[in-house]
Image 1 (cartoon, chains in turn yellow, brown):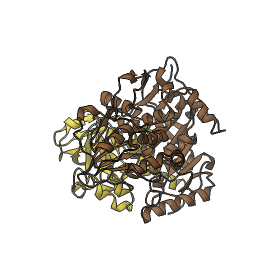
Image 2: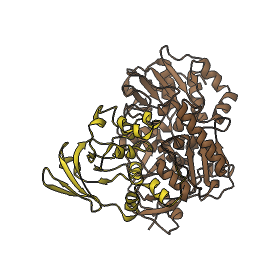
Image 3: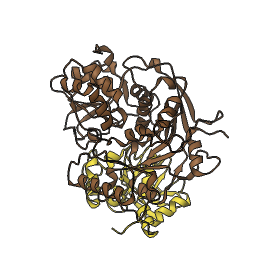
Image 4: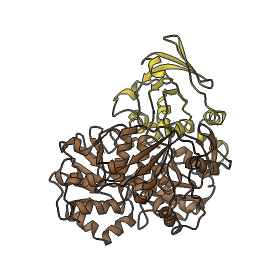
Length: 165
Length: 420
């Protein structure tokens, strides 16, 4: 899977309450994404185009267990690349099928608006604007299987373990 | 190679002899706790069958009593789930209701040496009971309900060894806020707590530290077991449990000794906790507050309510300040009422609410407006967490919050003459 898109940049320790404010939780799924970063970057959610890539610093996604990864995926974010990912947020990335990698040096290697190309399974990142490359540790096969299935709910549906909606 | 407590518990749950940091292990889950938020339309999916109703606990805590139609629907789904699958451990609105992590500790659902998951980031609270407890996402919880399994990437462990004794009006919350200031983020690290001062810290104090570990982004936050814990557990369960101590040659990323005598009251400044706390005296009573709050899974215990009563008893909350107190469970509420604590609080001008996550989660029972300043003994101070993104949230101990409610400014509790 090769992803290519325009970059949005965020800082260190970006939390789930910014990505998905509590008020969004009780809304129907399709109404949640427009609240993303409404507290710290109003208007951002409406500027995101499908395929855009989110780049951040340390510990991206710290905080709540709420499905913030699903909100970013539904918004059209193709991939999250951060210096480090919060452990709980990373679980949600896997489980809601949002590609996300820890990439050392990513913050200095890309500016907002530049174009990145991500060979996800290999963990190879190329800055098309600067013609530079970075590497990340790829996901193990077990987690890639969840991503390929479309997330845990899709996986459970496929196995017949959920009641029809 | 020696293992830390978390590594030993994960190795047992994975059915392997040993695990090491960096490894991904598939584990059998001992206990899954489902809370009302997990039943929201658009988040919840119905399992065709569950792996083991006897290992499932359902607690309604975030939106009780229902605040709107969506939350009422979530609570209805929870009740249907319990009935459909025959879940016996159910804490609905009423006498046994409480915040899930408080209930899991008080009822010993979180068991030593076991793995517990719940769809709430403060589930690490259960670490106080020598349990590998942690928050997972809603999709993962549904997976666990169907299969009884999940995976963990084993994180390296930081060991905190406590020595000495906390001074008067200084609490475990202050010790946590000092650790958060000194060491900052603990992302992708397990925490292990113990040391010679273990016996001076009650289970509530230990739970405050384990719960707050979420605010420094830790994974598991597990305490060593001792007689106090094991007596508590034995008195409440006949289920098997496995008290787990670290191997003598356990490998830690770092071992940090904390002298409790040296801790003083601290507060976290707005928007984050890690690397963002100061001693209360440094603020020199310059920060005015609109709302004070004591409650949540971190500090809604009987000890917390008694501390508030000791400080505000016979006095009045400052004019212009709202002091909201939310007991961690209805059992705590009842006990506090029997002891006269609730009457003391109400007479002093506190508003005592039913047990719920309430104001801490910005859901109801004390939501903040733009420009307001809140000092809270709850868990989290992210921008917008308790309501308006333009509100400012400081976090302190219960004693600091109660002292500040009397003065209307963030105040060191050591300066308030207690009315014990």
